[in-house]
Length: 595
Image (cartoon, rainbow, N blue to C red):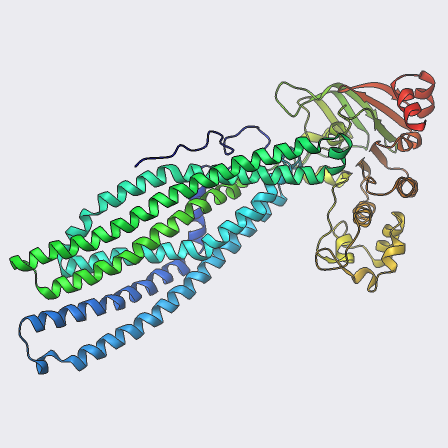
């Protein structure tokens, strides 16, 4: 077949190591087998019910073929037993209708059960992903998998999987019935198989990779848009709007190119299948006519064979149509199953900190191989210290904060908590001692109380109100009609971004870790409110170790120790007064900020 070249750009190709993995074909097949094994009883029942429906459907052609055969033999009207034939035909129709309904019902139930399992498996693995993996991949890739890929799979699981099973059973049983009734006609039908296989090979050689690239292209579009929205203030501050628009337009252009290519594939393949169906029926009638004239088969056999051949058209078309749908679904499934390939963070369950001091020893770290963001960083944070990390944008402050929180592991060097290396401890152990709070927050659909209890399930109402008071949120929370029982999130009370951030900080107060890393934790509040909240938090968190990435220098002013990060290194270390008197980089920042 004459082809159109696919787009030169392939968004499915791994361009960076930061994207979440896509499952290998063997992994996808193994997961599909696992799903069917979980629901093998329902699947076998579906096949059994479908078999009865097919046999009932073939009763019509057999009865009609027998009637035609008797008429051609000159049997009289009385000997035709029309009443019996009509009665049997009506009975077969009723049986077919009942069992076809059961097939559709049980197929839909099987699809929903498998879809529910898939969603639960993906959610469990997504929630358990290492934080560093999510940080590097960004929200766009995971978001497109949770939304677009799940939606595509929903249609496939509800319709394509059961319909394919139904279609395959119909084809095999109809071919078997045709072989029993008129073997020469069955051979004629099989002669059209090479033509059908040729077209299918042409299509399915191109379709999987094309659909995979189309899905990856959409994910790239979603990632560009999500990242632009999430970093809206940064985009505006650095005047990156035009560049982000150009990036989004370029990715949309690349995605739509793959959309057009897959549309062209379908526009060639499905008309070819329709032509094959016509050739199938024409060959059965022509060859069957010759066989009848030669006396090799009877007219009744030709009638039955032609009707069964006609019945083959629908299930074959059904298989090909839903198999095409599965090409899209297979790509989405591979993207979801790929999350299973991410190994959970390994750690020594017996390794625990012996103390609360945080120590970084000659740490190197980079997001890209061979390019270090941090170099030879050494830092000692005694228990109860309030440390502020300051420096120009892009110096590595947030990266260092994430290393101290155990989100990333250093490429070289060590970061320890109480003498135990963070990267060797289990994630649960690290989270019980160190918490990271940044400007990314989430309000879960449910009561305000439930959102707070996520941090500590045994907290009393008094403790919940105390946590809200510690973050200056008790005033607006008490003004809610239902107080702690007020529904928040989508469909509930609409919280402002600042209020949502206060809830995140209240969770932090309830969790009560001894070491906190705060990265723009009050960025959504106005400067005066943020200043007041930080002082309130300082009183509540007195005695705990606090590492604050200071984007507002009043945070650094209140800290016990300030570390100035420049070009991936700590260039200055000391208190506010010491660094101002030293007249170095911090003093210049302070004068610039303070005016």
